[in-house]
Image (cartoon, rainbow, N blue to C red; front, side, top):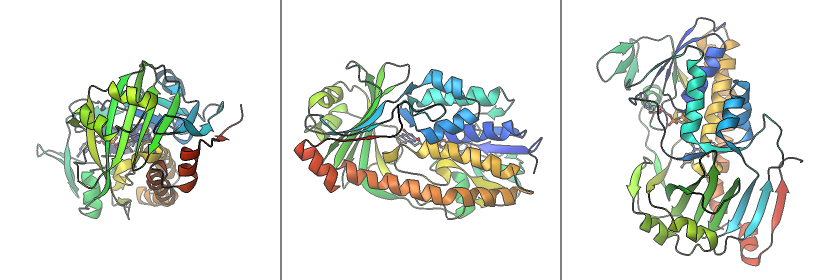
Length: 370
Ligand code: FAD
């Protein structure tokens, strides 16, 4: 099916929605993006873009803008919690473009994507909260209706459109909560993703491209429930109390936190079906993942590429949706499983890591040659 002139509506101007809008518009579609927020913005947090995601962003023609907004990661380093001693290092070497591993602020990636869709003439309508969809079209809370032949539901983990396709679902609490914070990088931490691992808890930190800041996500196992949305303010003292056994530089870094958000981590099922009639699910709307492998945004970006290619190679939208689901579903399941098992490793339940953390053994690996 040629996408030239094909009207496509994307719901959600997050990472997945904007990447899909760019991928579809590059193939000639006439794309409208509907976003509930009054303006396009992102929460203050960092993002790791791994080579799979970077490769797609380069293929979408955003390589230069991405490179300017991000810094290149040198390694992933697993450390013990008491002194911050390195126990395992995955050297990222000099990965050739476009296979880059990058750190950046989420708002900076959104800016790159937004500029990338606007330059192709994609229409973005903000303050447009979709509440449901039926044969008439997409219904807004204002009572207005938007008619669309093809709808990409990129409306995130609490997707209204997923409910339309599958009915309501009930996520389950994982028994883990997470704090996030951004602090000035007073320690000149190099571009390395550092995971400080302790019993039942871990802290991930890395510097943010162009911002002289450190992004922190601290995860703790806990039986009590905490709210799922990830923008609930919390007292930094609660974070410091929870990680009081973490020593070395990490203790200083946590000591510098002045503003933090706490949220509960919930497990959602991968959607058993990804499309229905005119609607197709993409990104977190189809396959929300836990943040332990830094792959949710990367998967959404991959989805965007595969969806556009699948539609372009099919005679009808329904056939394109089916190819897309077939190409993506197993991969999403695999990545989500790997992400879930990382918490277990980072919390020192994986015997080789526990042994290394307690004995000072150091393991090294390399992802790419220099
Ligand atoms: P979202 O980014 O959630 O975007 C959804 C958009 O839809 C939003 O703009 C929203 O306002 C809009 N919307 C929602 N409902 C409606 C509606 N009814 N009508 C209109 N608009 C609507 N992933 C990585 O790859 N690397 C990382 O390093 C990483 N770190 C993470 C750290 C944390 C702490 C967390 C929580 C997640 C992390 N992720 C990471 C996961 C990643 O953030 C998500 O997987 C990704 O943002 C999903 O993109 P999306 O476009 O599907 O959804």
